[in-house]
Length: 319
Ligand code: 173
Image (cartoon, rainbow, N blue to C red; front, side, top):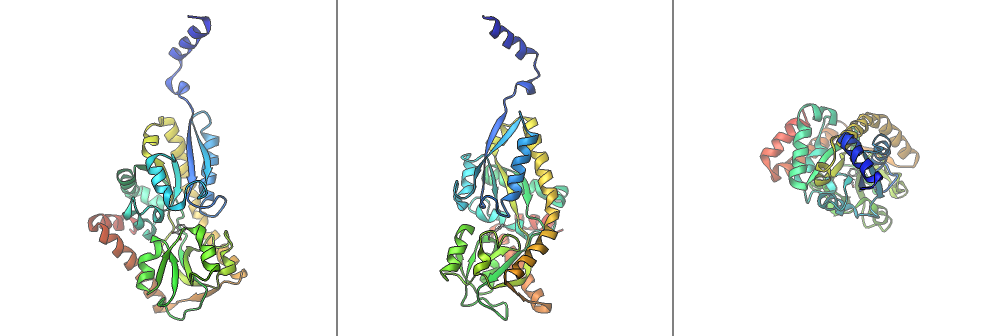
């Protein structure tokens, strides 16, 4: 045994195991284009982990839909091709159909952590998708219907509307003809006149230039955005306690910033107005009925999947 080898063995024997644990690097992919509204919290999270996790855990930011197509990202993080994903439940309903309940929440992720809902959602993701549910962004951001043609009542008969599972049940009850697309295809669909409108949150319309093709936003907004950080369960289980702690601390740090969305919503609505997007507002009883229909259509589709689990989720997401 040479001197170097015996020195290394001696060092390993006295070193605490955490000190000799290797730094782990996770590959991260986002379902939304890099730099856009619903990717930015994940990008900030990656930066934070790479600072606080030096020597313990790092995230290699691989990219967005150009790296893994939007509707494929769920499968990729489930199988471990991707270690950590920034994704919304609407893009992986093939794996966690009940995930659609998350955007029907009326409380915050902080309240869901407090009342046990977080653990239920995490268990659902672990069992059905083989991922650890790490964090939720998007609280306080509502979804809207955007149009290229005016309507005077909440009746979408004769209109073709771009959807995802978020809006599907609700827009169906309003009579729309629906086309499902990833966000990356909305601009072209509008430009070609293939759609008369689309569902999207209040934030992010200007990110991809959709304002150029959008004439109206229909108020009020409904539901609440969920964009979640998911870690492949095998990768998660293989992490040291120290690495898990780095990721969980950064998750809580990210979720604390959800409160800022209330101010951002107002400035985004103002920017839409400046860009020439007019508001069609359903007020009073019509507005109330519109919102009630959004809720009842949304929950009916969750109940049709599993009535018992739907009831448990509804109790803790809307308490
Ligand atoms: O409209 C969508 O693509 C969608 O479902 C969604 C979900 C969360 C944030 C932004 C968009």
